[in-house]
Image 1 (cartoon, rainbow, N blue to C red):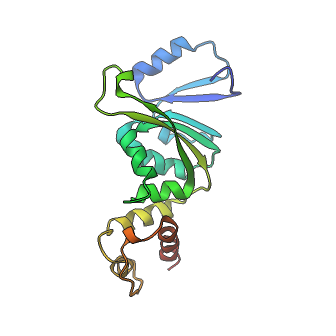
Image 2 (cartoon, helix red, strand yellow):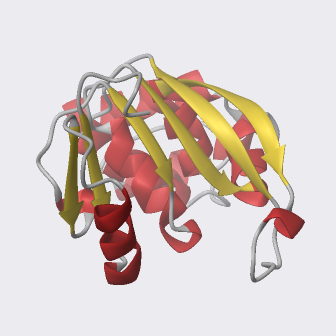
Image 3 (cartoon, rainbow, N blue to C red):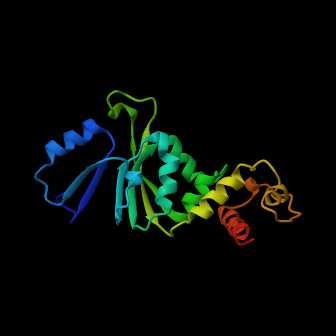
Length: 187
């Protein structure tokens, strides 16, 4: 990447990997290596490339949704990517991801490619930003999905809005859910 990009900022939370990268790439003039949590960084970026911690995939996607950038290439657990791409049984994170990004899987990564071998397969996904998603939209959609088994009438009641709709969130499209979230925020 150093040969292709004008500037790279790499942030590594694992001290051993940080030290290894520092010793290996010390002479790369366009590379800035930092030790720390990249999700606490205030750096702006155009392209985001990461092997996300699988335990923080959802939190990472929600963080990315709020950033202004062009595209991202990230590796995630295959099961998580399937959840993001599911047209049935949608979840809050799949609704938010499809609202903020255009998403496609660009390659499968088998667990046998790692040492030690993990229990799960991975995929590399490509995200193109469609729009920045506010923290308010994210938290509202997440809160709506905490009532996903209730009727829309009962969900909206939790937000102080009267409705007679007997539909459930699972019956609605992602666009309809986002529209309702915006209505809740305006209320």
